[in-house]
Amino acid sequence: MSINLLKIILEEELAKLDYKLLPKKQRISDMIYSKELDNGMILSLGITKSKIYNHRFTGSYYLAASYTWSMASPIFLPENVYERIGNYITLSERKNLVDKLFWNLTDVWWLYNDSKKILNFVEAVRITQRKFISQGQNILPNLLNPNKYLDYKNYISALNEILKNIDILNNDVPNFLNDESLYEITKKILAKRNDIRNNKNGISLMSVDAYNCFYLSSKKNRDLIASIANQITL
Image (cartoon, rainbow, N blue to C red):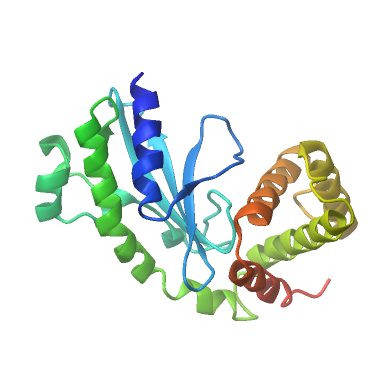
């Protein structure tokens, strides 16, 4: 019951902050909420159940051009695009929102079998999301720099091609998209591009991302994906 309580409260309360639960995920157990920012970037909030603390969970932010979770490394995207929420909660804020056990720890966890604690987490999201977005304000200019994050741009270029193919097929046969057809489109494109993700896990990853982009992205996000992709010449 307690995990169900968490899901029910988060879906309702995070919707007030414009987050949507991703319709398709890599793992059934994932709880990932995302929203599109004014500049077209995607802010995701992933929920993690603790393996150390009983009945506790936390959240992590991820900032990217699509709905992936999470692809951060020094050569792919900078590590600070993926951060735990606790990194942005001040001590004075912790005293109102966090159990005393975590006042002086970087990593912060909330009880998921207590509705008040879950609401405290939602309030922590409301307070910290602006701080996280602010520290990542240089990500987009760097993505639009032709000389940076080339591996990530190759990923976005492949994603853009998959999305264009989906658009064409959907215009011909509306509502054609299903898991099998999407997997085959993705597999064909990655094979043609000799992309490093042309394997079972990579195809699955890109299929999920393309599905979420197709159903959730606004024109602004799709245009952003295209502008990043257009920097890559195959």
